Image (cartoon, rainbow, N blue to C red; front, top):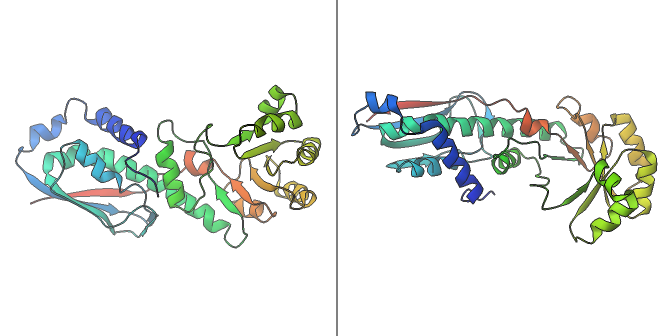
Length: 278
């Protein structure tokens, strides 16, 4: 599971709090006595896959801490409407000033996890894995990929640094498919190569490619290409793969399907924060 103490995540939370609170929550300071204690509950307002509740302790700690925090639904758990995800007790001002940041994280990440689970459920029984992409919100990639994984999707590359994906512009710049593959093998990293034409596909197979990306094909065309490849390489399909079409692509015999929509187009789930005074 994800390391929520990772510096990128801590910095992300810090920036979110600074963005919202700034010099101080003037409304809570004006309305609520500083000594007032309260308790609050994060409630699911719809069925969802939970993601990001582990961030709550970080959020509150950065604002001075709370008396008690109990998480009842961790990332990857299912929650139905009306279920409590977490409860917290502390100074009312602290709970109020952290409310929006906490909900923003939980709703956004929960939305990704819920959509990811729908993709995974859609391909169940095909033997095909669903991958996420780098189409994430700038600065939130580590968290959004965590949410995708919480929904059951397999994380692909975290960035440009941990695996090689040779695309059409790389092939052009390198001087061809064979040259690009030859150059990339020197890195010792996993290599995947995108092929757009039958000629590129044949050249990639002849050059020993073991992982191919086929982009923007219909399911019928993809199935035809996969039959020709005949198990000589792992196959990923991508390009405008939606929740409605993902099963058809998975049934082509592909090893993987990827969809940027999981992270860039997931609607937020509905979560509320109910505050009560001690």
